[in-house]
Amino acid sequence: MEFPYSLRDTQRDIIKDVKEVLENSSHLVFEAPTGSGKTIAVLYPVVRYALKNNKKIIYLVHTNSQEQQVIKEAKRLGVFAVALQGRANLCPLARERFQGGNAEELSLLCSRLKKDVINGKREACPYYSNYMESGEEILEFIKVVHTAEEVFKKAMELGVCPYEAIKDAIKEATLIVAPYIYFLYPFIRRNLIEKMGYALQDIILIVDEAHNLPEVAREMRSMELTIRSLELMESEALEYENPRILGHTIADIGEFLKESIYAMEKFLQEEEGLIPHYAFEEEISKFLGIGMNDFEELSRQLIYYGEMVREDKIKRRKLPRSHIYHAGSFLYLWKEAYSYEFIRLIRGGKTPSIEIYSMDPSLITDVIKGVHSSIHLSGTLALENYRNLTGLPEDTVMKRYPSPFPQENLKVLYVDDVTTRYGEVEKHIDNIASYLERIIKMGRNTAIFFPSYSLLSKIEERMKIDALVEKRGMRQYALFEMVERFRGEGGAILSVLGGRLYEGMNFPGEQLEIVVIVGVPYPKPTPRVKMLERYYESKFGNGWEYAFKIPALIKIRQAIGRLIRSEEDRGVAVILDKRAPLFRGEIPAKRAENLIKEIENFFKR
Ligand code: SF4
Image (cartoon, rainbow, N blue to C red):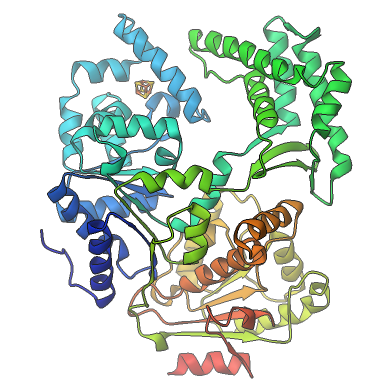
């Protein structure tokens, strides 16, 4: 197998390190700039090793565009790869009739419909029925290696189920491309590995855009109960004869739970607050007149009735969603999750909610240690921090590969007379607005990233110049239209760090020449973030870095990284905050004596 491109030095280094890691059956965490060709540099040695040593590869992606990139490279390598997505994307019935169904609901529904088809009720799922009768053509199509969306389109032409076809193709494939949850959820992972016909230790795992993994893992173990879902639980109970649990109707229990959530608002500090141990249980006990020991019984019975609702909905060919079930599961987790890594939160606003939040991603990602080798790659990664958060072994190889692009193509500047520091920002707003106006007037294509929508709108109000603005909650089509306008006409575009514009869109060449980062985007010191700081302090001894510094650093570097994605790209990044030197070791920013002049000089060269 030949490397399908002309090889760059960075790629040569990556290939060498990946080979070593595979031979030693160990783990590699690395950072290499976007555009450096790291996907193929990882895939090439991994595919060769897997074919030679009878291993299988799971390549985890965070977005569909990453999946497309991996499939493109797999085609060039000539390896049989299958792109897997959840039923929400690949089940035609989910797209037609059951939009918004989650993985568990769609799985329940699908199992029942398939059973009905097998028992002769063809109409239960015609796509499955057609696939059972004549699935050969779609399976042949999949063998040529396609993205999940391409398989979906072809399956629709043939009237067969793409999800089932892809599942059946997994066994033959060397490379499976899948969203994170396919490996992180124990139940889904077991199914996947069983389908592949290999043991965990025969899997080589690749995690793309790995900086996202810790937060995805945290969210997987967290759960929320909202006032809205309790209102829906009450309606659901009334629809199903409102059964009694511990002497109360389910609708009344919903009402008491709502009251108990409102009672937690006394713990709010601004929009969020920590709920002390047992405070919520005591409130419920008071309302329901039950003992603390009955709490488990309450959750179990809610789950029991919720399952009956789900079963009934499946029979009626409806999405098996039960708000009674959700409340029961939430209360069950609430009671169980009393280890140090969980916190309980109240969130304020018009419709408050309570949340169980898991602070430790390693409890989910620990399983990675069981694979043959794992390779974690990203354009921006704090290596040691990532290794510790995910619980990878001490001897994990950590590498940072230099940019293959000319260093002189990027200039990073900061100014030291403004800041967005909490408590100081108000007196700097006019000055920041003035900087932005002067930068925009230069007529270069400029993206300006703010730490929050509220600061964006405050500063935008003071600016006396036109710019495109990404508004909070903007519809996808409106955002795309705005981006197309920016690409076509140029000018300035205002957005937030971590927003959709910042994450997933490319602006090659002169489409983007200047990136401005307004302030240092430290997370807001909410009770949740402070608890994360405390947790990491006790676990790793440097909580502030984990909870504040590294999230800010990653955001700044990602924003800067948008400028240079090929040899031809040139650009200037500007940090409008006097705190920029705190990142001196990681971001080589130079203090600007005369910002506008220095930018002009850069582009004159
Ligand atoms: S068999 Fe396919 S089309 Fe039918 S419900 Fe399951 S995933 Fe959807």
